[in-house]
Image 1 (tube, rainbow, N blue to C red):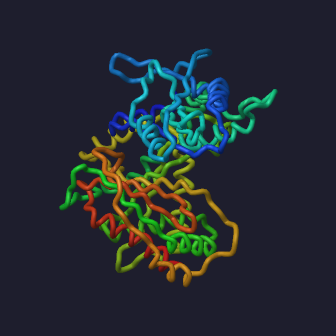
Image 2 (cartoon, rainbow, N blue to C red):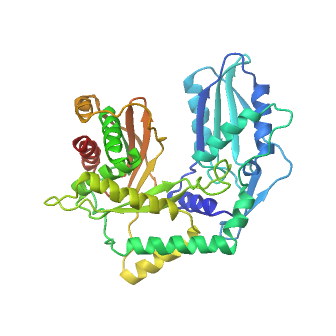
Image 3 (cartoon, rainbow, N blue to C red):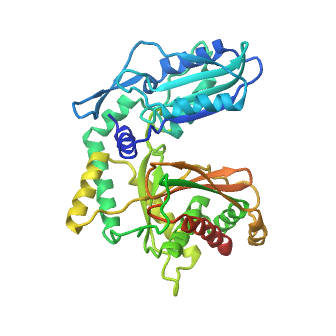
Length: 417
């Protein structure tokens, strides 16, 4: 198995979630089930990740991936014609675990009535692909129907596993783990102290949409010549320190690893966590924001370079560190910035960012009994706004503190702009 497969399997086991990944989209008028069946056959035949099953040991742990040379997958046709019908199918696909030993890790269904389709619904096992892997699948659909399509340009999971299990792969993993250990050496083990307002279900999602944050990140990025993701991480550090008193701030960032040779178009799971440690300074002597952005830039770059390792060795390293300290290291805060970086257009002004503050919206949405980490921040673009989906463990941080964290993050960026 690949490191990415081990990584996501451990997360699935730890959280009890399927972590199936995909969505539902409207289809153009006149689309037929036969067309989508042809696309599905093309993709599964072309990409080994989509016809992979897993062999398990007596403890129920996957130990080997098995790529089938032949077999069947099914396109499900569901009667319906509304967004609600598509969402019901999407939800069923997402929350039904794959039988990974017997089932191929892909589910496609079409929704329509009387032969007229309205939606395509897709879900994949996260052991097969990550978000960038789905983007590679979408790009490859451009070759569907070609008489002689070019061969897939990315590594297959089996090729990736061979590379990772080579001596060079082991050296890469060992180097990454030395970096993690060095970064964690100066971080106190105790992190989020707990909540006086625990809820049931335990995990809740706060959705914060901010045009002001979008403008502020762009303004500071232009001034500092950083990427907006680095500016956001700096504002994140300021906000979390203000709300929790934690210093330094530690975040696990999701590293796509697509910059590695042969990985840009690989249909597989490559994403792993990297570590960013940033200290915004005490309230009495805060680090100037532009300087903090520069420090975060350096830390994030190093995190990306060292976010590629054997997860089993990584967990052993963390266990050893916990034994030395007498308490576990808390790595429960995550940032997953899913936006593409854009540098087009004139940079906004700080005044424009401040003027947009009144347009921000904040609402509580989904509730789940389990999630990953104590504070998991998903960052997306939403038109001319940044949208934060903040999943919080209300037993570790109170809902009111989560709302304040979102506001403080926005305020830190706007003030800097």
